Image (cartoon, rainbow, N blue to C red; front, side):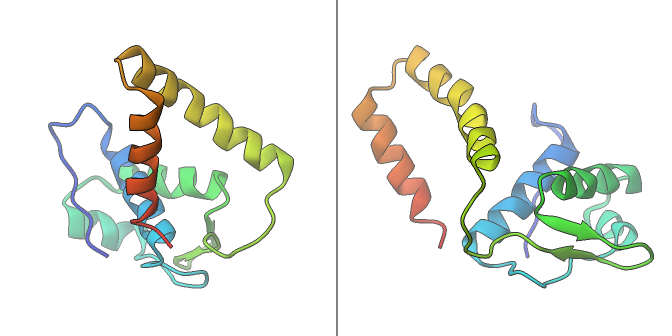
Length: 125
């Protein structure tokens, strides 16, 4: 798993880390049952604060993608094929709406958006 954080990005470091772990799960690089490095090890590897990694891990746990076990590493629990509950689908839809609205507000056409989605989907399983 290759994590690259950009300290000059508008996106906070904890969010960059969480997003990259999510992408690793989506691509199949991280699979159900795999473990992430400990918070301390990840912070050391990336040269960032332990609390930044901890915040990322807790966000991923809240999203139901990892399980944090006391005195153990974080375990991937996302990525397995399953039927999503309606509330999970609604969360994804609610997260996508403002992103799509901004894209359209910037002038993207529906065909461009569809092409963009297809290109992104090819990166994952």
